Image (cartoon, protein in one colour):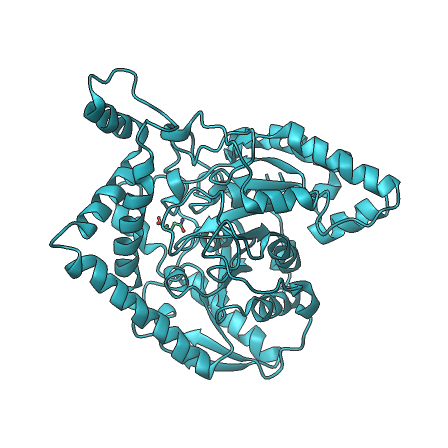
Length: 487
Ligand code: GLN
């Protein structure tokens, strides 16, 4: 592998500016790396070579003319395959969109192109971002770069695996209940879900609109912070995007955290936690103490309801969002329907996978007349209680920490026949989506089999700068992030 690929985006940026490597060379090296390893990993659904090289060429021209480069210019990046890049396929890893070519750019895509970030391809995911292991892709499974027999986590498994294996330096994922933080933790990299509304979702295929957020994957906190800066900002095309000024997160990464109040979430340090994960989080707590932080135990009494609440709300919202895939306007259409109704039903029966159908049925049931009050309305009320738990907690502490997941990456197939066991994987991550707060997973060690462990850090709404600062301090006080998967 080309040595530059192992470097962080910050280091690659410096090398580009110092003319140690050109953007075209870096992009070609990354494309070659993908050719060499992706057969084993399955991280990419498709490559967008031409767009990537066209962008890289522009970067090199700017460098040749001595012009200032935008943030992250020339750094190889992958988009989760539920985000639109004009003229290329956006499949959401579903048969129903297998041949869909996007006629427009997502807002985040446009921002990346404006910043001259080469987009190398579209990363594999669980179909419509529904899953925790990336085994629900209609095309192929993603393998964990640390051990090919294990899952990379989901739903943004391709985005995480591609960064962890140095196929690309950066990627974007979407997080509805943990889909960025969980795979980041399983693959030993940094993954971050911003505050709800921080990043525009225009051009992201909607799963559950009151929960979905787009966020960065990187191998360092600094790189993730810079990528969030590039993609964030108000967008009139997404009415949920917040009209607030952009922030320069890198500025506060090195702030002293002496006196920072760090809350340890009691409920997530309790039963069900694997021994290795528990040890890693306990040493993270020690590390924060050494850095001068004050540790406080915090209880979130309603956290135990979060999975139940999520699987009512997320399924209800997806049953409505996915109604648009009907074979009429775009996407797959069954070839042999006798009438309109049969066209709808056959198209959806043939186009959607088992997990997606399960969610649509659950959600339609929860929204149906007579059950709405008992399920959907109740879940909304409970959601408010979870959010209130966080408001109360953040009156006492500045950030909260927990494991990102009670266990490390599991074997491929281990939970495929047990949807409930799969759903429980997200116990630590889902509540942040219910509350709309930012959260991040940062490498925090390895289990006895050498699989990565993630530390989750949560902050109040819009306190991303504090979150990155606390994560960066922890990252730099350890060297877990320096270890790369050996693939
Ligand atoms: N694993 C959760 C689910 O299956 C979360 C997915 C996500 O965040 N997109 O719904």
